Image 1 (cartoon, rainbow, N blue to C red):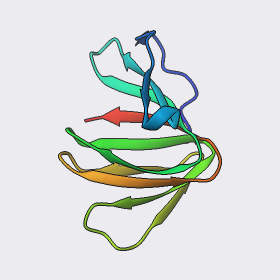
Image 2: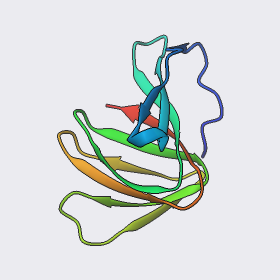
Image 3: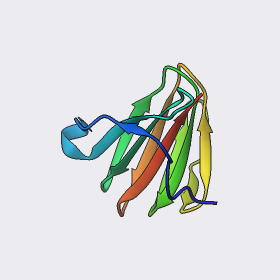
Length: 105
């Protein structure tokens, strides 16, 4: 299931721009205090680091991802997600815009 709305969220209006504009996101805080980010990754191959565990939900487009310590790439498309451990890294390979919600644990 793809999330289409995050009801009652407070949005940080200043975007976070990473990797020379290849990744752009906005931070959200929900009424229960949970944090998320919503963004897009443009075509590129990028490496991200995590502090806390994350669930990356694909809301449009697709990407291939590689978790730290793994040798095989996996594919995710709209309606799918993948989990990333805290204090880790993961790579994404994007050929068309990958729209995501990052759910922080």
